[in-house]
Image (cartoon, rainbow, N blue to C red):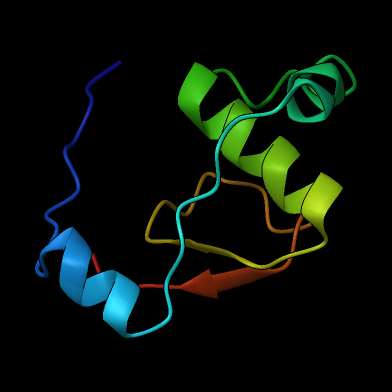
Length: 78
């Protein structure tokens, strides 16, 4: 499985100034991972989906394999 890197176009400080916050991984997120369908194979994708579910937030991604039925998704340009 090939892996692609996401290009971050803005410095983290600029992202914070725009109101974007980082979301630390908490125990409740890791517990949610256990209930995810097996089609989420990438560990990072699994934790991102779990965080979106637990926090009831939208996931911003360009990865079309993120299974939009599991979370609300804002599709980013790749």
